Length: 69
Image 1 (tube, helix red, strand yellow):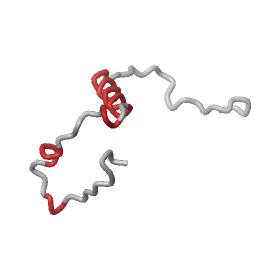
Image 2 (cartoon, one colour):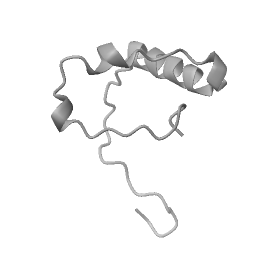
Image 3 (cartoon, rainbow, N blue to C red):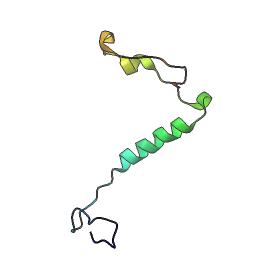
Image 4 (cartoon, one colour):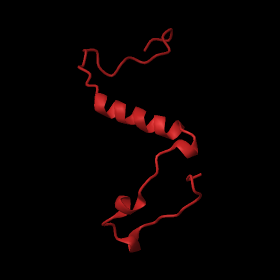
């Protein structure tokens, strides 16, 4: 880095191939779309299957409000 250049040198000079996981990006976008919906339009969560098989004695859960706020 020179005094005239406020940006440090990159950690490597050679070009590294970049891998983009489009499935993960699409999943993230779908979650963001669902979260942006009005509460009445949001999909319902079936809690039973979500916690099935978990030991209830060791779960640290708390319901804050109907919409999680």
